[in-house]
Length: 232
Image 1: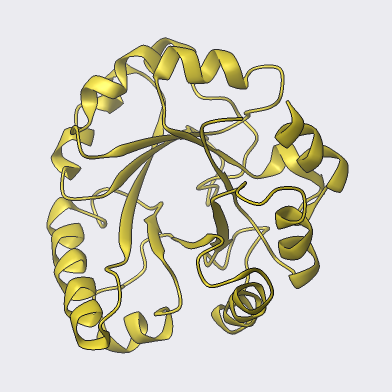
Image 2 (image 1 turned 120 degrees about the vertical axis):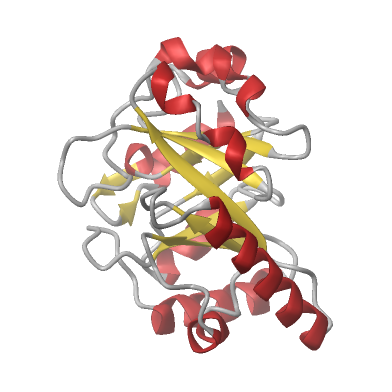
């Protein structure tokens, strides 16, 4: 596939190595879920060990590592320092907590850290669980983020992603006009080999985010499904 690809919900070193073993450049992103109530939760300590292993084995720039956070107090020096091994901070929580002001402050803080350490600035992605067209109005307020990720809406308590539900196809053609020109657009939620081309065509998305659709069971990635997706 030519579009950007993120495989999320990595929980083990074995899966991280396997996911990267089929291609020299796909996926471009690996995601860790730091929300403790998630079925795919991983501690920051274990995630950091995986990142170190992958960078040593595949090279520093082979893949970018994404941390998925839900209503986390990231604008705290100690917390940011703890997650400094990440390339991307994906905010997957509620917009009344992860406000545009919160994102702007986080962007400034990450820039300061990057300047101090003389490293590239880390990215911020804001995720939205969209139910219908009415939910699109607030997306444009997050112009300061690097990417917008659209996920399927779920009524299940504490289910902020990885539900396997598909995004409402009626909103897909409206997404590109809801974001700024500099932002990338990612789609998540129930994407599989059969529907990915349609979802990409309707949305004009830059990339897709896979989790449950490429698992053998919750938290364990399927070699067969990953390879099948990359070959499709």
